[in-house]
Image (cartoon, rainbow, N blue to C red; front, side, top):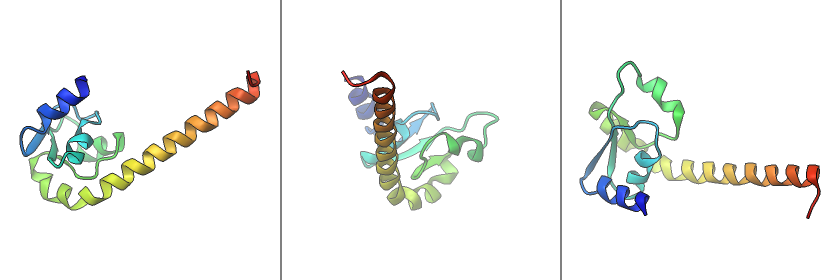
Length: 104
C-alpha cells in the first residue's frame, strides 16, 4: 500500500514535484491526471536525464512544462509498449530456462 499512499500524496496538488528523477512516480502522477515536474539534479542536463525512462509528459524543470504537456498523449502508449516488451522478455527467459533445465 506504500505506492498508493505515495500516489495520493503526489497527486494532492495540481503540479507534482518529483525530487527523485529516476523513478516511475513521474509517470504515475501523469496517469492520475496531474502535471509532473522533475526537479533538475545539479550537473545533469535534460538530455542526460531522459534516457533513464519514458519521459513523455514529464517536465524536467518548471520551464519545460509547456513542452511536457504537448507530449502527454504519447506517454500512455509508450508505457503500454514497454509493458508488452517486458512481458515478451520474461516469456523468452522462461522458455530458455525451461529448455535448458527441462520441464518439471
